[in-house]
Length: 545
Image 1 (cartoon, rainbow, N blue to C red):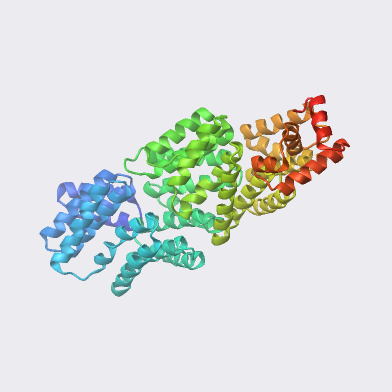
Image 2: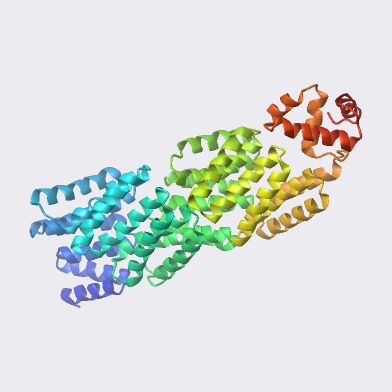
């Protein structure tokens, strides 16, 4: 086959999304006769989509120089942009920033008014978005979008719609933001977007939907991304992200073996490709699944790998320490993680674990404040999953504060939402809390029913730490003789026996004095005692102190 035929075969394979064939034929043609700029760009894209990132950067650099040699400044700047942009995404900020700066200088010196001017605005907008300055990012995306509209550059127009949507979501205008994300996805469906931009749009839209807990959209677009990846067997960069998202959704729906398989495939695929930071997310997801199953050794290693790939291992690592009964270590690490979380997106990821750990650490005021923040974020975002997390956290804190009736109301609300979302593990966790609350009010039949229901789900999922937690509590119930008192009433009785006032007890338990009054009244009534002094004597006589 002549060089010309190889070149033609490479171009044809590229148009048909046959990245391996396109790479092979264009590379062969290049060896026989060095490719010109436009064909080098095709080879660079094919290399990138095959996961040959270092090689693709070298080829984009060649294409850039080739365009400069022919005096095509605009195309040279375009190559410099994509080289810089992909380097920035790989975490190489110095090299990436250098190429972005080079592209900008070329256009400024040539005083060119072109679509590439809009592309060069995107890194700055994305940096502001990452720093939490959504308003500043939105202004830049608007400017870049206007340039895209003026030159009818569909890739740029679509990328700026994506960026504007992400900015509006961060600003709390989720409905408007989602409309723009849907517009970006419509452009992808139309087939007029270049392959690298398609992958960027898919992954960013799915991530944005998960950040605001819009599971319906996330599931729908993840399936679309799966189909897109399946149609291109050679594709590497976006396949890993697809597997991660699929794993997360499978985990939520209780399909843990399948979720583990997808997470393993993602970690294997992404960790063999230098510069793909998504590997950190894959290892984190593996860590979560190992932790829930009670495989703490593998969970620890997966979280360590996540950190090596620039993905914070929190809150999973703190929850692992809690499961290992290292409450103080868990408390320190989750507190630091929350302090480092500046945006609503980051805080919603940490707050549920923070509440759980602070309850175990007996830091109820901190747990209360975190639950209140989660409730506010749930209302602001109008997202069912986040509202379920908030109601669950609120119910757990109320239960720890002795406000059992209010706790039950909030926990039943959380359970209803989790049921609608088809999230069996979360349903079981809430049922466990409802069982504990039912025990507090003396409803032993409901307690037993909820514990047994929760344990059945945990057993089906092989969630060993949760099975152990239920079994330990049930064994404790069988051996304990509380004379009809709830665990909170026993706690109050012990405080009474040491001579503490209701006001002091309320302060120590972080509840209202009125709540303590009610507990004292219940204690005297259940034990048929006339006074606090008689209650103190009863406590010592029956070994309840």
